[in-house]
Length: 323
Ligand code: PPE
Image (cartoon, rainbow, N blue to C red; front, side):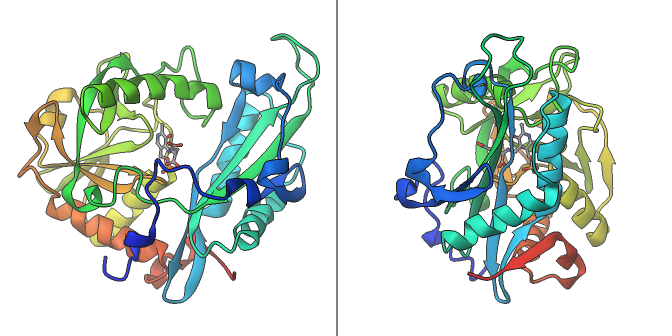
């Protein structure tokens, strides 16, 4: 994790400076952030029907590249389709637009936030044909759960909120309104002095954190909830599964309980924003030695090498670009 230049990454909760002057892509055009105005009666603003993505670009020794860009955009389309929103652009157009936005903002690394949303038009829940719009913003963003916590690990708590059920919602979609569930859990955890919340599903199994997937390490094996659990199928989760296999670490996609979480040798979170963040304590119980474990450290180091283009075996995950 040398030469990461993390000290230059702004804190995650800072409002990016100069956003009004930044370039954003809205419905096919690059415009200034300030000019990207939407109606107060935007359907998505009222009802939460919309989808978004979080994508990171990293700068490495060979230049800048976006991590798993196309797959993120494909997930944006899948999320949108699940709620009958038809995005009026090709995947390729939105993929190119993401590159354009980073270039226009001269960002050698950063976070991209594409959003599909339903415009003002007909009013009421039954409005089914309002225009679907697409916006893409980008800004420099630091470690989601704190730079120092990438090494030290965070403190998490098991939430009193249950992860939304697949009977009522679409946990596989990265849908705007569904994040109320995550925000309730996150705020509860923060109010109690923790960094992050872990949600159980309706059956009492561990599902995921408010904005990350969860892994445990026990006796040298990695375990993460299966795709059939009410989790977002994180691209970082998938990357870590593949990287673990590459390192010869056995991986099991299986349900596990709160007790297994407490008794794990190591716990870590994965997400575009959170990257690979160790969890050092859950509900006042130290996990393993109470600091970043060796398996977490190995996977984290490989992940940071991969996203920075230092690992040729995974070069197909990168979309290089020049600023
Ligand atoms: N689960 C949830 C609920 C989730 O929001 C994310 C990403 C993940 C898992 C991990 O998915 P992936 O990024 O594909 O590995 N959360 C995004 C938004 C965070 C935010 O605060 O906004 C992210 O990491 O960008």
